[in-house]
Every structure is written in structure tokens, then in C-alpha cells.
Image (cartoon, rainbow over all chains, first blue to last red; front, side):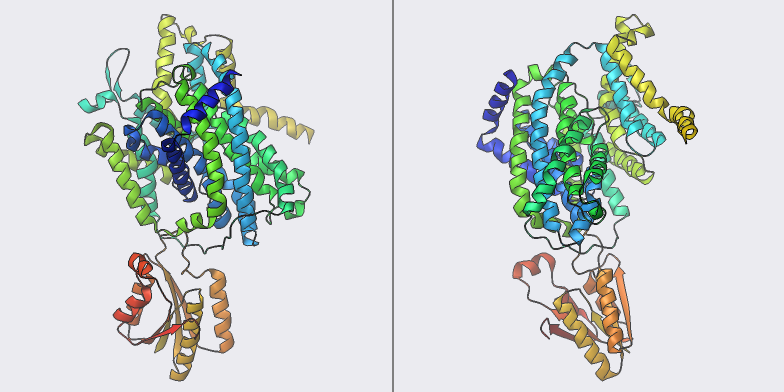
Length: 499
Length: 131
């Protein structure tokens, strides 16, 4: 059991007072931003990235991992108490959770969410330990054309599968790819989209893009929609569960985990689909169907477990292949790059200490979150009373400081504002943010792999079709792209014929 | 002329409402119930939800007072809204509820009641929760 040995070493690395403190800070910040709607873990990691330049990469990632898991926990609090999901992954939790809270069972809803998240997070992280090295073994054998195909699939998946509109998804992806192209072409040495500005020759730093789109864009959006009717508070006691609640919760937790992890690990999985699937399953399997729609505890337990398990799953492709499947993973990859760590299958080998410390910190963070969330739920709910101008003033301050700290040049602040305006426009017109950020981060790497394949084949396009792996992936891409047509001309007529 | 009640969904607010009803009756004036929030936080305990307002409406109808309810979400503090309304020639008296505040709480958030007492151009009647 080589992996377990590595993991134990990782634990030994994490259990120092300083690292434990950072893990605690991480999960605290993570829960706070998870509770607050509109401020997510992706934005927070982006904002804190420049702050962590002085730390060791391992310490920074221990903190980021805490923020990532904490955000998943915190999102459920707002869903349950306010019917305003803090994160897109807790939308489903709001359906039953808020009904439970209105029926005076807020404490039980919060408890099943927190304990379910803990169970799912722990199982998910264990699965990560088992699965990630297998994926690495597989990924090490892949060549440049295969990587190019995987990244293409990732582009197509985040744009076409997630989100409501493909056109908007692709528009967002293209904006991201264009931003990613800025700078000197690494093969030919030509300047691309630099408009003669020397500072742009190195490209636009991913941190500036992420902070601009997530933080400044969101701040402008909130500023434009500041006035809204505040909600009343639902009184929360300390979360607890009765025997009946435990009996009704544990199976949904396990089923939710089973949905969440694989979806998180897939290139377009995310947390939205598995939470919804989990909800639908619990609704079908429940012994209390009359309670669904009126506050069934299964409808909170399942989806909450699913979203935490998917968070663990997300780390599989991120650590093993360097492929982000959600916004937070994308920003964490950017963090790897800014520390000069090359993400990819060799990460486990070259940065073994860092990777296993990160994974060990996930277990510890999970435990801390349970300890932090069960007794402190009422305190977290109070965060919602902070006037938003105070919050966003702080966010814009951190954003500007962070963007300036990257290269210490004023140009980055102008870029930040421009990107903030783009982010605002995207929210205004309903463009999803994830494809853009994936485009910025994966775009240059996809280009590198694609051109490497073409160089190897001497410019023959057939060089892009490396081997069986890329055949399969291209087939999947074609299927995903053609799916609306297939459904329209093949599936629907068949169904109608039968009917 | 009208008696203006600064209403919040709390024991103090209810006390202010009761006092306001008494005053409006003795003066033979109408009652204006006012609730306001800056509307910039996700949760505001001082903001009356629909069911609170419905309850107020039912109670006042039962008591047979001539009343009007106004709710404002305008980015200004409840105190500012009330002081401005108190400046209009319509209002003869402002009624508010008072509660104990810690020194730190006042330092951080200020006291709406204090601002109304000091800034209101017309007389202010302040009552405690157990009125």
C-alpha cells in the first residue's frame, strides 16, 4: 500500500501547529464565503492567491483546500435558512431545506447537511486517494495528441453540457481563449494581440483575469442591484438530529456520495448534475413521498452529500491530469502555475510531498468543518446581516491589491477594471463564467499540446489523431456536439412512433 | 394631521404601535405606520415581512383606527427615512420603541432611536417594550 504510506507522510507533514492553523483559517474563510451568496470559493482563492505568495506552496494549498471544502459546507446554510443558495451546487438543497426550516426543522436540516457533507467528504477523499494514482498511471502513457483531445473535450463539456445555453457557453469560452492567447507565441515568437504594449508580451496573468471576472465583475453586478427586500431571519438553534432523522439520512448520504464523486471526476461533471440526480433518486426511493415538497430530510441529506463528494471528485482530474472541472479547481490550477509547479500526471511524482500533504489536509479540513459548523451554525447565519457595501468594498480592495501585487505594474489595474466590466457584461447577458476561466487556463496548454502534435507529424493534421484514446475522445466530442440534432431527428421520432 | 409610528417587528415595535394607536385616538388623528430598511444586507431583522405587516393591518382594522402602512427600501437608514417624513407638515408626533443597547453595539451600528430623538423636527414619544 504505497499510497497509504504517502498519505501517512502527508499527515505527518500537515500536523504542525502552523499548518493546522492555516487549515483552520482556510475552512473558516471557506465557510464564510460559502454562506454569503455571490461570493464563492473560486473568487476567494483568486483573491487570496497574491496574499499567499510569501508562503510555501504546501501551506497555501492547505489553506485553499480548506476554502474549497468550506465553501461546499457553507452554501447549504443560506439555502436552508434563506432559500438563497450561496453556491450553484446547493440550489437543490434549497428545495427541501428551506421548507424544513419554515416548518421549524432548521436545526435538523443544518445537521443532516453538515454531517452528510462530512461523511461524503471523507469517503470522497478516500476515493481520491485510491483513484487518483490509477488515473496518473493511465495519464502518464498519454501523448500530446491525447492531451489535446482531452482538453478539447473539456472545453466542449464545460460549454455544451453545463449551463442553459450552448451559444452563451461558446461565446464565453471564446472570450476566454482570446484572453489566453495574448502574449508572445512560444513557437514562432510573434506578438499576439499585444497592441504594441510591452507589458502584454508576457500575457495577461491568470490571477488578474480570475480576480477581475469573479470579484470585480460580481462587485459591479451587486452594486447595480443593491436594493432588494431583505429577508427575515429564521431562528436557528444548535443543529441536532433525532434517531428518526439519522435513520432517514444515512442511506441518502451514501447514495449522494455515489452520485457526486464520479460526476465531480468527469471533465464536465460539476456538482449541479449529481445533486439533482440525488434529489430525484431520493424522491423516488423515499418511504415518505408525501413529505417531498414540504421539507423531507432525505432531500437535504442526499444532495448535500453529493455536492461534497463531487468536490472531492473534482480533485482527481485536477491533480492527476491538470484538468479543472469547476471554477475553484481552475483557479487552484492557476495557483499551481503561479508557484511554478507544472500541473499534469507528473505532479504526483515531482511534487509528491505537496500533493499528499494537500490530500491529508482535506481529511483534517473536513473534520474541522464538522466541528466548526455544528455548534456555530447560528453565528454563520448572522453573517448575512452585514450590509453588502461593506463586504464588497473589502473585496474590491483585496482585488486591486492582489492584481497589483502580481507584477507591481499599474497596467494590471486597468486590465482588472476592463475584465471586471467584461465580467459584469457577462452576468448581465447571462454568459456563464466557468467556460471563460477554463478557456484562459487551458487554452494556452491546449495550444501547446496541439502544436506539439503537429510538429511531431510535420504539420500533417492526422498527427492530431494520436491513438485509441484520442479516437474515443473525439467520438465523444462529436456525440456531445451533435446531441441536439440526434435528439431532434432520431430520438424524438422514435419516441413518437412508439407513442 | 397624523401620528407617525416607526415600526419594527419586535416587542419594542409592537409597543410603539400600541402607544401610537392611543395617541392617534386621543388626538383624533390618523395613524401612519412606517417600516424601512436600507435593503443592502441579505437579512434585516428590522424589515417587516409580509406576514408581520398583514398582522399589523388586521390588528389596526380591528381597533378601528384610520391608518396607512408604508414600507420603504431606499438605501437609507430607517432613522433617516423617519426624520424626513417627520419634517412634513402632515406629521404631528413620532412614536418609536426604545431598547437597551450595549456601548459597543451603539459604537458599531449607531442607534436609530437616538438619531430620531435628536434630529426629528416634531415631538417624539419613545416607549419601552413593556409599555
